[in-house]
Length: 159
Length: 400
Image 1 (cartoon, each protein chain N blue to C red):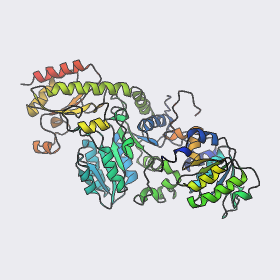
Image 2: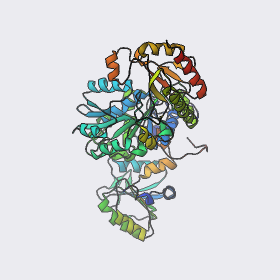
Image 3: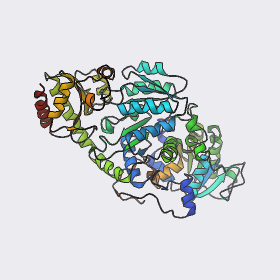
Image 4: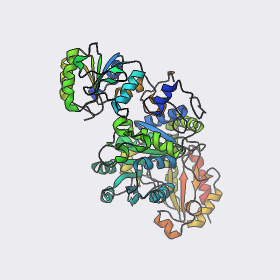
């Protein structure tokens, strides 16, 4: 499975997607021990505009939480999904409706149907990857903890 | 590469400090857990081995202990190769028993024996790419397949091969450990160890509640669910290294990283010299056997061609016809080989196990360990091969 997903895990695509400014996080949890919460807080601390999407929450990080993508009153560039794979096609449909540029499916959110829906609407997909890890790899401090960023360069990098 | 010789780090502000301690942002808190110089060393090793990341430790055995502590809990079971470094055998037999972990040693040459040793509570397979000192070569792919069919990870000690000669993760291993003291550092100056993990093993397969379940040692965090690919490594660093405390010093990380810069040059010289010396020894009348997997007559030739096409390492044993007394005489006569208890140095090293590392064992016990009273272990360095051969020829000629 992991090899067949390589098409949606290309470093160039991932780096382009990190230029997004407005990110909707579908399935964002207010529980600080959940992965989605770690990722949301990280993106917030790294300069992104975050829009929580979760029908069971009113507010997360002091930000209004919307029940679905269609209710969001402002523009969204990238939709980041922390939901079971069977919820992904519906989210992809909503992402198409609101005109998002990127659909990012987090670890384990693997849905060929969602990918097909998104791509039919010219949305670029990233699948089975974590946006926090990829941001830390290319623009952040992943190398501070001995992780393999796969970035080999003699150029000076900021600490 | 600067040496960050510091214990701790001034935080930007309270929020940043909180985010670091909560693992919400990658940041430095205290050098027992992370340090920028050590991190640079770790990333280089992780990259060379093709892993998701690495965590460095004060020594190879500290690295191994930490990997075991991260994976195991009382009542678990480990299956390990019977052809392992003596320090590892002691660690496994005694430390694991103290932790109420069961252990079975199996024949590295018979993958089917590994299959037969699996129990319901088996949590780990462990072996060495090249066995110390037996020179055995592990069929990593076959043993990894058996492990994975039973949802068990395979950990491989790659110290003798280094990623220049073999990358166990490419063949299905899940965790690689090193004594960086040896070939990675390469100059016999600095102790260090490192654990690399592939990031691909499914720690949430139901067999590893110790990694999957909410951790009481980190306010209920589920390491694998939260950090995915990095779950094992985060737990290894933020819990096990934090609690065991056997961190690598920044200065050692600097020296070991400097060693890695010449790893390919040194390994090419090591394996070419080792083959030349082994070929010389196998023709000598005072030598009854040479256990170097790189020799064409070695029973490991097929595995060497698959896993170690660039060379079978540079540490091996040979047996002297004259037994214990001949061993002592040879050691006394050598002038280029340093008589000491280490391997993987740029200079050639020699040791006579029967009178040093295995001194407490009877001849019968030595034989059970695959060693005879006349066994000599050498670690071939990067000197001129002809000089090494001349030194050995002189020493062997002096045996009376």
